[in-house]
Structure formats: structure tokens, C-alpha cells
Image (cartoon, rainbow, N blue to C red; front, side, top):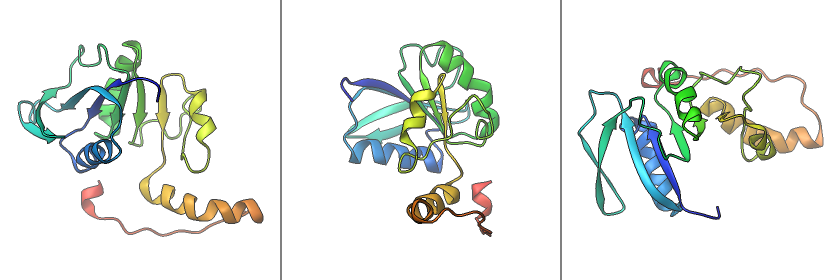
Length: 162
């Protein structure tokens, strides 16, 4: 990344939001500013990030002004409600929910498999379900050697994933 960017995490107080914060810190992502967005219920709470306390804001129509990247992990209905507003404000939304996975106009990207698809975005980039990503990363090298025609998979995920 050639410049520091303003990043918003939509769903910052959830389990995935907290992991995103850890990754941004661990990788020393080039941040100009970090905005933490969540529901009104979580607004006002504070989250520590790289030695400073950041106040969580309730997401609203003005939340995305000046934001370059939105990392959205607050559920499909929240992503559907806010993604277009973020894109209209000039942000690129990387959506971790199910909201856009089947949308033909939104690239479905797993960086280890098809990173070039991200460049085809029109403001929103989707990614598959977490178990699908892990399986894809493991299976893709095999698929390159011998095309795989069918995989039958069963997953058993916790209720908290709902």
C-alpha cells in the first residue's frame, strides 16, 4: 500500500471485528485513521488499539465520509443497509458477510486463490464463508494439478456463528 488510509471496521465490537483489529495491529497496516463502527447499543464503548483508546461510534449516514476502506463484518442485513452508502462516500467495502457472495456484480475473492478478481470491484468485494475459504486454500493447489469436479463437505459450526 503506497499511502496511509482511513479504515472503518463495521461490526468492530463483534468477535470478527476484534480479530480484524488484532490483524491490523500485528501487520502494522498503514493507517491514517481507524474508525470503529457498531450498533447504537455498542456506541460509546472504548476499544484499545496500539496503545490508544478508540471510541466506538454508532454507524450512521455520515460514518463513511473520508473512509478509504470499510471492513464489514456485522452480518448480512447490516452490510446490505450500509455498503451502498459507504461506496457512495468513496470507500471500498470488503464484506465478510453473506450479503454479496452470490451477487454477479461483486467479485468473490480469496486472496490466496484469485487476488486479481479484487481489481474488478465496483466498490464492494465479498469473500466466502470461513470454512469455504480454508477448504479452498487447501484444495486449490490440488485442483491446479488435477481439476476437481465435485466435493462433498459437512461442517459443524457453533451457534455463535449465526
